[in-house]
Image (cartoon, rainbow, N blue to C red; front, side, top):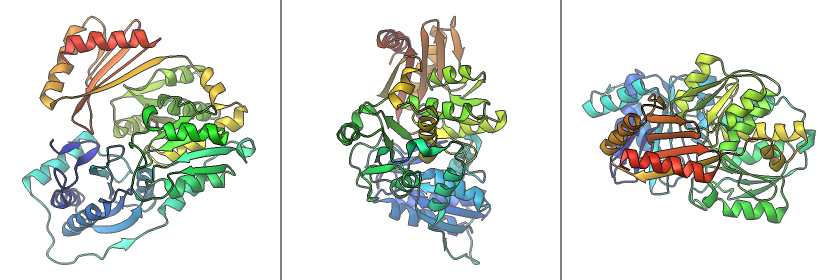
Length: 444
């Protein structure tokens, strides 16, 4: 399996495709492009993180950068710290939702944004050519800033627009998977006055279950919500940029609902444009329609969504994987913002999670992924576009086809050597039928 290099950064198998040498090279390449500027460096809790953070620090220092270490931090915390400290960029050692055998390097620019495709390509090109800036003298000592997480929590609390009396004393179960969100996720909920039951709340990096916060991995959380008679369950991923929600009956409501509920909370007070990627459910369109605002659709990837938000002055945005971006806090997906907005909606409406979900359209979404070499994925995407040329086709990111009965999106993953096929329709039968049609046409 090869090293994954994309707009989402660099990911690979620990000490196989991703080694300390590779990490140092990519870091020195980024430092070269930043011309020795100031960079913040953080990591999630994976046990290999310290090793890779040391290698990245070495690469950044070699290029002449001033390095400020944040320690174990959530990815959105790093995005906010860059802007607050007027740094030239940031690097996070994380493989996000990938399994424990993986680790990765995520880059952020001076706006706290993931690199656009041009910058991502430049980083890879400098690394491949080995045209590094290499200092001979004048190295800068490493600095430390261990309060970025606390400042992030305060910012989310300050941004609250709703009276939270309705959630004070509310029983909330938080599953932090022993990842980077342990400390600050619990701190936020406690500050709101919630009665917090914290699952997997030690930042050891020993993941209690498969990291991706999807239904089959959250049975412990669902059981705990039922047992504790909690009002809601929240699940973070290892770098705490995504949030999944479990309702008061211990039912996983689906990661697509996170953005829809967050948008609802914002739009009821501040109507404005909403951004979402091409693979995100039409649930967000239903919420936007309720408040008479538009949805800006972008290519998949938080960098694309964030840039779409800036360009269209969106009040909220994100992706259907549980990623919510509140531009007042950071232009990175943020589980703290997502928890805050969900709780504000509960407090404002006096309704339960289950009641809120019942007010949204019932749509069925099928998400499938298949291991597939990159060259075959490109061919499948092209064949899909040609096969359904008579339908509404969007080629801005893979191929999305809109049919009368629903839509299908076929694209290469940014983070794994797989092809993703996502379909949405009125029910499972219709969605599966769309997937089958597209798979047949694409030869997958």
